[in-house]
Amino acid sequence: MSALHEAFDEIAADVPVYGDLDLAVEQADLEQRRLRTVLAGVVAAAAAVAVIVGAVALTRGGDDVDEPVGPAGPSTPAPTRSQSPQTWVDTVVTPVGGYGWMVPDPVQRARDGWYAAATDYLDPSGEHLDPPSEDGSTFIWRDPGSVYPVEGHLGIILPTDQPDPMDGCDYLLDGPLAAKESCTDESWDFPGVENAEAAYYERLCDSWGPGSPGDDARPGPGVTYETCGDFRVSVAVERRDGAIGYVVVEGRGTVFEYNPFGTDMLAALAADRRLTLPDAAYDVPSNDTVTSVVADHFPGWRLDPETRSVAERPGYAEVWGRLGPSGLSVRVWPAGADPTCGRSSLVRCVERRVYGADDPTTVYVGAWDEEGWADCCPRSSRAYSRQLVYVGPRHTVVASLTRVVREPEDGIGPELDQRVIDLLLDPRLQQGGEQ
Amino acid sequence: MDREVDLREFVSARAAALSRAAYLLTGDHQAAEDLVQDTYVVLVRRWQRSGTIDPDAYVRRILYSRFVDGWRRRRLVELPWASPPDAAGGDEASTAADRLTLQDAMARLTPRQRAVLVLRFYEDLTETQAAAALGVSPNTVKSQTRVALQRLRDLAPDAVASFEGVES
Image (cartoon, rainbow over all chains, first blue to last red; front, top):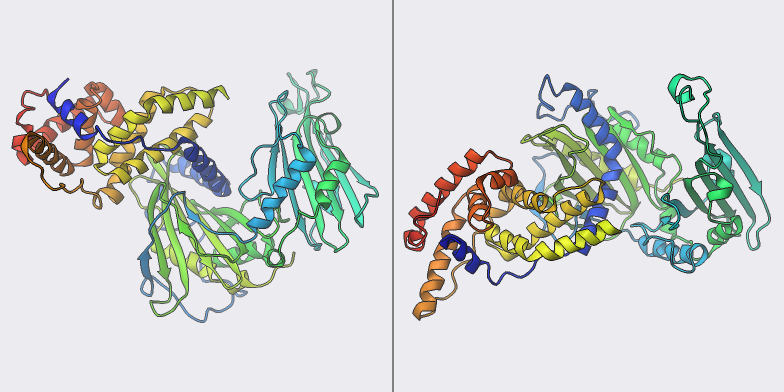
């Protein structure tokens, strides 16, 4: 052992054991959920970048997108004030534990009761359900005998002219039925509610082996297990007050052999009084409205087709898509307390007075850098994550940007910040919703 | 489930050593804690994916590369090594003074220089192993080690006098 080793030993002799693995697991799960919101856009961007990596730098350091982004469209309300890097006054925010901006959602308390209801009806023994999801509207049910979990979504909405779970198969299907697909509607009397509707969708597996449709579009001699497929079931009830409670479950296998839940069981959950939301939740703009606002500010933004027109999380709007080489998502929910900054992977967190120090309008701007993108991205590239938060008079609006760049280029510049702030402050995102 | 058990066993076995290394790198308890926690998060993400890894080598690479590449720009300027406490007397005071001088000198090295010293003379890795942890060539480790030791000698000749003869 060298003398230097002994000196290091002495310096580190009283160092306690740092780190909390359980917290790390939570942080990793949280990061994955956050990243999933922009994953599709970023992966697409990374793919586009990979194509050109051999010829040119991944980005040229600017914020150019695949189409020129001009001024806001004609439907954009004229801003009464303008903001720019020259008007910004930034104050660094002291970070606390966690990742990204942790933005309070006042509707969360209501959603916390949803998991308890789901447990009572779907897993009274407590053996099958995973711990509740971050927002409480999603659950994972596992059977020890199967490698495929069943994923469920539950919620409560008010009727709209958009497809909703009371529409059964029209809600479940993305388009006309394809070969091997089927869907069946069912209406029945369920005590305590006005109407009850169920829909059972399944897609059977194609046959395997040479000549299967996936190989050369001809029916082949391959083998198909009778119970191989995917299923999705929706159960919705119209309550006495007009609200619609619903549960949608999906999993692998055929619907009647592998769906672990009875229809009455799901209906009872959909009708449970704990499945409720405060009035403010119904005021949140729809995904369509948010999509329209984002598109007005960023004509080059391309909505990801995975964004569904029907809110899967009532009281919460979320759209995501691609903006040139970046992924851009926008989320809206009822306004609550100001956000706190997570220090994990933190680059910078600031509280920004966007119109100058004398005006209280504040947008929270944070930058984090991402590890773990090696699977998606070219070598020596890095994904920068940037979140901007505006807690408005009625709603909180969060924009998340992720861009893949070649190190050590900066990911996102102030010009893009300025445009995103204009988007966050758009008064249409503070107006009432149509849900 | 077995993978989770393996992960917990690995962390349990390595946590103390990682913590000490993180402290030697950062010279600050809070920064060391953050570095270890960030390392765990990355390790968990990797562990949750399929496939096998060499956990020792992987976690070392995370810890040191995060320190050298990421930590420096946002932490080190704010976190010089701890200020010397009040001096005590006797032999203990002399030892403490030497140690503090070494700490102070370490704080004036670049992150990569600090990392190569910790890897080579605390973790007792070979140049090749240290190079793998930092993602650089063994020659870079060799040259950085030589420069780092010379810098220590310049900054803290008394404290480093006893290290003369250390292989560089």
